Image (tube, rainbow, N blue to C red; front, side, top):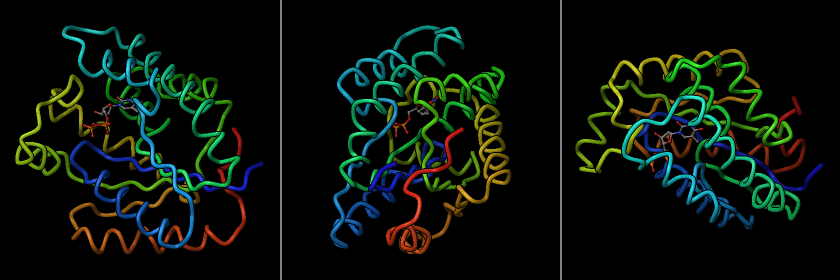
Length: 216
Ligand code: TYD
């Protein structure tokens, strides 16, 4: 379908996604590839508006409304930014995707994970990445990193540790069920070693083959 390569990165807040995405993007650029680094929520202008609601609204948002807001961001992002980039032949490195909704809104907010997944599949036409990197980290360690970075918590980060335990378990279960798409990396390793492991997984995908995952 496309000439590009679609990669996503998942993990708890504080797992080091941003660092690793920056390093991967730099390495790919050095290798002569055009990289679109992007994120959800907020990868587009409309998405920024949705991100502001869903992360910074003061007060409750009903779980189903929250799921729909993430899905709306995703629908617009995939249609207007990710698909065009893949069609141009870019490597798309994306911070969070459908699996974040399945983990956070499904396991976290306790909606039916299969329904949450279907909602995002409808929103995106069933586009899946070729590879999803999970930076796996114990929730207490993730929380410690956020505290030491002295970042203000958003609505979702303000949730209890037990919420993050459910999310981590959901991520690991998804990865175990589909080892073809997922690479699980230990986020407590030094950043250099994690970056090298990511490159090892990505390199064979650069030389051809499928650019996205199978349609669902
Ligand atoms: P992220 O951009 O990774 O956070 P930060 O800007 O702090 O690095 O993600 C924002 C939050 O949104 C994060 O707590 C996870 C949550 N989220 C969901 O709950 N569902 C989703 O579908 C997505 C994409 C993110």
